[in-house]
Image (cartoon, rainbow, N blue to C red; front, side):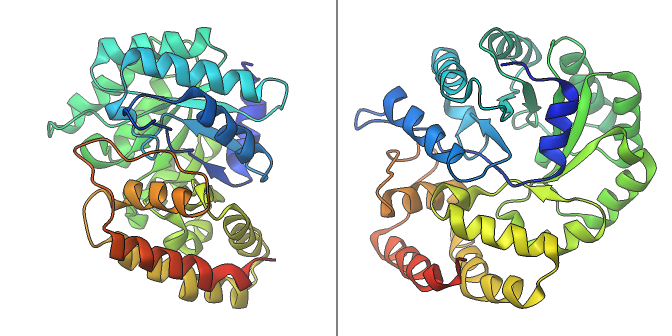
Length: 308
């Protein structure tokens, strides 16, 4: 599609964002048919932008061939819908640039630059990593400020100054004092997106400092609830917000915190529970136990009355 930067910025500034899980079949191979159905289903549930091959989409477990399929299938489904299609890039600098070119040629509108893998690095090194990638891809880029890729405000300012195609910052730290510093320092040069796991849990704090939207992983299995929460957040309906947090998001986050990687694994489990299974997560992630899946079903069932 390759929408205009203004259209992309508008979509990222207002409206709920989400990342579809990546579909694998019983042989652990990418399933393009069910993935296409999933993206189409997303579009029917009022999502403002679709991020494919993201963290929830197990980006770091994908081969280059699978990535190519994912972005191509997604573009075929979304083409003509006017919803921005965004895909992840990252890993090594050469791989990130190569994946960026694949995405651009496949009709993707913008890129999400993921943190570098594994190695702890100094701020200047992370900055140079991000700068080289962003300046060598042809699409607008959102920088994911998280984990090994976390940059402080002054380095994010430098990145905004030196990379014309940097359009957004996705916060995965939850460090609101640092984020507020960044927002007040850089201003509307960038679009700001909430990106901590289960971002709804701190959405009220996000919105208070000017972060009007976030990515919702639970959209994969409770899209109506996710939209109900978001619309009431934006309208300031504290009674509904508190009820949904109390009866859905807080129990969900407590369950998610039982094991590392459950921020992804529970999403796939939830998709399975509503009849939209996408296969198991790939190692080193692990699926929830049978008992934990039962707990998740109870949380979903108990939250059904909160939609509307």
